[in-house]
Image (cartoon, rainbow over all chains, first blue to last red; front, side, top):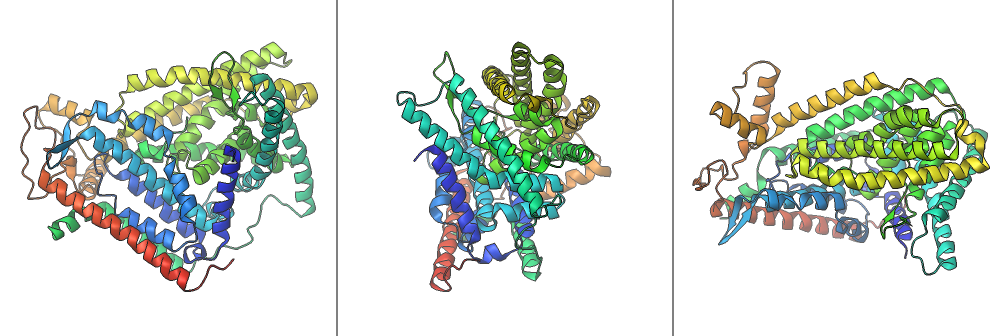
Length: 266
Length: 347
């Protein structure tokens, strides 16, 4: 499987799970976008040595996962590929913060290691939350929700069209690269000169397709806005979800739940 | 390079969102005035093109490494800065949503780093004037090279600034910059060469494409300066308040004034913010062991650091493990119960 195949099948699996009926999937996309944004801000608001306090947020993720139809494999696959940027930049922290921070028996953990682990924790929590949002909602509904939350119509249309044609053009790239590997089996990657005509050809095909797509859109009565098939409807359940979600986030942020539980158990 | 959620404080992330929202609003207004009927389809397809084009990794001549197209400058040359900026925003949004490149909180910063500098600075101030009215191959190549290098350098500096101001990574500003700048010089050169090559290829087959009429406008310099200042101020100020442990600034204040914190006025905005912060930061100024049982023993090399106390560490860890097991267990049980109940139906 080539990396492009993998990327496309990842997109397909998220799309497929978003189309399945699930309690989380039935909620209004706006409610889920709001709670996800709240989640991300909460994660980021912890200090860089607060390693344990954000852990209860996993409860929210776990419940969300349980109430969706996202296969655990596609979730785990993305999470396993840790963000190279976060790791590359975070791994220097142990060097710059050698001060002792935690003591576990005779082992002393330095502040730098705690903050490095905290960076990884932030990455995992944030990534899982966004995957849950997309895997239970789908890109189309999230884009529609963004439009209703005030994002300009041009940008929403742009997001929807981009997402619709990414699959088509990615498949074209895949065919081009396969053709290249058949003609130049000794070269794993094309050279700059080859890439010039590859990208140029892809660009020309995209432009030609844009003209046809535009004509087709006009034929179907396009007047500046793509309409969602499932209309958004905010109900009592959505309001409760937002209240409960944001309330839980506030609780985790304001109270040190792991320590409280640990103290109870000791 | 994408800025990551994991390295960002909410204040810097919020400032990035504000700045990028302003540019989105500006570009949207400009496009509404231009009224190019074919624009939505063209922008959508070109966005998909950039996304797909980035999947082609090629060998960089002379070195063993590989690179790929960034796309911002190419889009600006084909669509004009405003449409190109919106297309870049959509590409970054889809990357953040589906692949976790950067993340949603960092999206604003990434839009500024990879979209604003290329579309609103490098393109109108370098690329357009250098290409001129009659674009020759050499002019196009030089213009693309310079514009791409400058755009990416600005983006790299912005990443360093955002990371340092957020304070989660401890890499010092100068070290980080010395690491980022040369890498992005190389990336910029490659980006410029690829952009020029593709543009030359396209103009040899469809020369009219480079001369499409698009919503041009003044280079936006005054707006940019105001936003740079606002972003810096907001990011710096807010993250100072949001910080939960004595950082370099507070430490420096402590050395100067003898007390670790500046006297904060109890009324007004700063007073309110400080009160709010005291309430929200359960571990004020980050003593890991602020529970009553924690005996803060001062270490020989200075009391500024919280002493590691085995007792508090243990109860925190124990609680953390319990919470994790509970969380994952609840999910598994819930999912199992659901799968035994009503099976998955297609909506």
